[in-house]
Length: 139
Image (cartoon, rainbow, N blue to C red):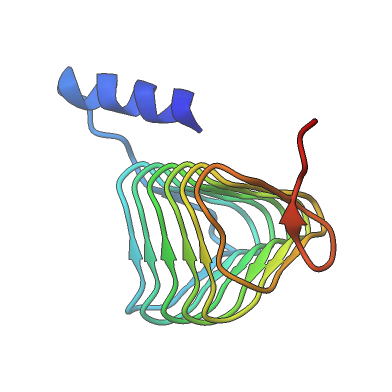
């Protein structure tokens, strides 16, 4: 996600605008906001009053519930789901089939492992795995 951010910054500094791309089968609420350079794949749902930052990837079939804030250059993998009023920090990655329960904050530069279920707010820069999701211990 850092590399995508660096490339987007270079493009903007050199006068290139990044297109926002939305697959025709995606469903985007009229009150939702999509940032520049965001890519929304097939079968994605972005529900009312959600704000999706710049350069975000919303991969196939992920669900962004109401009132979410997805930070710049985050990536939500296929079939990831967020409950209502969730914040995902910049450059964070939410793995395949991971779930973030309502009213939670995932920090910046966080990796949520495949299938993990986030039940509480997280610090920046951690790797979360399991059900419930817990920081991966490093030896």
